[in-house]
Structure formats: C-alpha cells, structure tokens
Amino acid sequence: MKNKDKSDLELRKSLSKYWPSGRNFHSSSINFIKRYQNKIIVIKYGGYALTKNSLMKSFSKNIALLNRVGINIIVVHGGGPQIEAELKKRKIKDREYQGLRVTTDAILKIVKSILSKKLNKLISQELNKFGRIAKRLNGENLKIIEAKIALNGNIGYVGEPTKLNKKAINEIIKKNKVPIIAPIGYTRNGTCLNINADTVAAFIAENLKAERLLLLTDVEGVLNNNKKLIPELDRKKAFEYIKKGTIKSGMIPKIRACFNTLRNGAKGVALIDGRKQNAVLMELLTKQGAGTLIKK
Image (cartoon, rainbow, N blue to C red; front, side):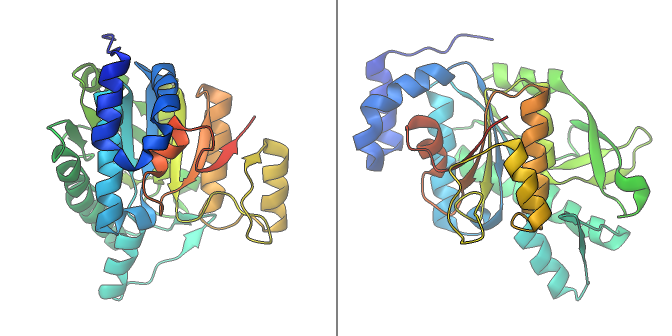
C-alpha cells in the first residue's frame, strides 16, 4: 500500500484544521497518528450518532482528518433507530432474538431501503463535504459480503458473513478513499440478507487484519450493574456479565463480535461513546480513550 507518511508540520496543520477543540492533545496525537499511518481502522457507525446532525458532522470531520493524515479508514454503518422509526410508522411489529432483529420479507424491504439507499447515501454525502473521499458500498452497487442464513432461518432473512471481497476494498483504500459499507449480504444464490452491523464490522476487521476495530455505541462503553463504565474487559469477565444479565440485548452481539475479532486477527477493539463529539479521535489519538477497551 502506498506510503502516506507526512511531516510533523503537515500533521499539526491537519490537526489544527480538523480538530481545533483538541489543541491540548495535538502534540501527543502526532505519535498516535504515526502508529496508525498506512494501517487499517474499521469503524462501526450507528445509533444515536447517526440521528443528530452535529454528531454526524463531527464524525465526518474526524474521518476526514484520519484519511488526510494517512490512516486507512473503513466505515460500516447501522441504522437501528431509523429502521425502528419506519417500522413504527408502518405499524409493523418486530422482535429481537439474542440482540438480532428477526427479519421477515416486509422488514427486509424496509431494512434495504433505510440502509442501502437512505443512510449509505447520507453518510457518504456528509463525508464528501470535506473532499470527495467517500466510496459508497451499499450492497447493491457492489456485493462486498457473501453470507449464509443464520440460525437455520429461524429468525428470517438474517445473515452471517462467510466471505469478503477483500480485493475490492483494498483497491478503494489504495485510491485514498473511505469505503462506506451497508451491512447487507447475499447468499451464493442471490438471496439478500440483513446482517448485524457490528458483526459485519468485526468480520471485515478480522479478514483485513485491521489494527483497530471501533464500535460506536449509545452508552459510555460497557457498563456494570451500577451503570458505571468498565474501562477494560477480558473474555472471562464479559461472559460472566452476559450470564448474569449485566450485558444484554444489543450489547451481546457487540461483545461476541469483539472477541471473535481479537481471536481471528484484529489487533485491538474498543466500544466507544458515539454520543460524544470527537469520540473517534479521542479513542485513537489520546491516551485516555473514549470507552471500554476489549482485551483477550
């Protein structure tokens, strides 16, 4: 991959332009940037961070900065709140099983409309305000993820990723573009499947041996029974929390995805608070981080 190393002066200029509020971190951030230059960072983006304009702008600016300083970013987006709002509007009832949305044919049509068409386009447009750097991969223009039907079809059109078009993604990265990926997969015979966005992000991070995987959440990170942040979490403790019900609902697939990713090739995983401005930069470019670090 083409070397994108830049001088300290160039890095400072980029930090000042794209992250003026983080000036107290700029000096130390340069070392973090150099650590990640030419490496792959996979970011799952969704939840509340995708519903508020100020947070969307902040996120896009964060990604633009990381791209500008030579870090290879891949964005996988969800769309849970938007899908739920549309289902409610149409009076379609849905349910979850182990944190996954049971997906009927009617729900799949809504999922595709929200993810592939509306949000994938919106995220790309926001990022392109900082330069034409986004490349839409909405599951229709280029099929990136091959998948199989999960749980023998007992939860409908829900998929489990099995194969990644690594060549296509790497070619986009080589052009200094940011892939914006919708979590839509297809079976070998062409059946469209809804895949959990955390699972897709983790799968991509594994297959591309990403330096880091960041999962943006609607909470500070992983919380204990007293709703206090757990700064670091290992596998043993995590599954104790799941058994006790401390970790539940949509956090379960996130945690499972994190440990699968660490086991299969990614070098670091963190769950960070997507409700905070500049959460991505705080996690990657400062010592204090912005959530829960997941450890083997």
